[in-house]
Image (cartoon, one colour):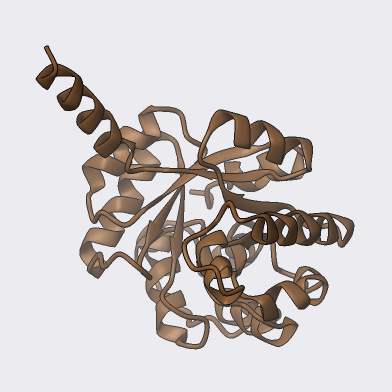
Length: 255
């Protein structure tokens, strides 16, 4: 048995945009629906969401069943166990919040990769298909196929964008507009001109450094603009069911 190919990684390497979503609802069923809807990846959020380890593993299974790539956003950069739990579940990558320097990006890569690149804890289990993939082959393929997405979401992180992008093993740099707006003194104002300007400037600098860029995408028009500017890792809202239900209920009440 072979380690699975990372379809998301292949899409990004081809230069095409990939569409995914954050999900902080601990539900394998919702993950499965998202996969069948045709999204390229699902970010299982264990920073703002709280799936337990069993649920997180079942959410990864739901990604595999429905043909989408599982990425897990871990709670923080410096706890080695978060990387172990996420990647041992079979996820194809981790998204690491609050990266503010090349040093922190390097730590994220080291915790995510095996020797010689890193110090990830080595064990059997689900990621090795319970031993069906020989350990030596698994280590090699896991180092090649799993991804590290460095999330920058502060002014300090934006200043260090090039050194973060330059770290070998960082596959994508994701710009988090919500916390960035807070860091810039306009909390919650993701569309503030200064925030949008900062995102555009940082996007150009990361692309010039040779790495794909990601961000939240709130509309088709916004996605078109982001793609035009070179973004590839586009995260659309997963809570649109709220808006759909509210709009429909409001309309029915007016009948």
